[in-house]
Length: 155
Image (tube, rainbow, N blue to C red; front, side, top):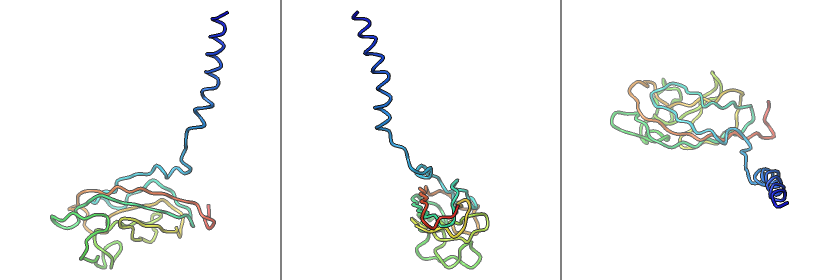
């Protein structure tokens, strides 16, 4: 009788335990909550692995250092003094700053250390350093990306 009671109690616990554990688990609402990617200074446009829909809110945070000018490491904000010339991907802003675009042919925009933008088009998010000659660059910045659907989002 005692063994039967213990067996019943064990069976009861096995059946109840998964339900109580499941209540305490949390799951991210969006897959982009997990996006944490490195963007390298010596590479051209790099896919962030995130698909954006027109109207979505895209929040990007970046930190790290990369070599943009000889012997000078800068963060995602780029160089404090030198402006990008007309032949850079995004002219007239800081050279060496983190920039982004949505889609293969999207209009580049400034990201820097952080950006919060509304997507004007559909596509994959691409990021890179604002520089013309990438082969002499070094380092990377880590980016965290969060995409939120808005009332204006179009699938």
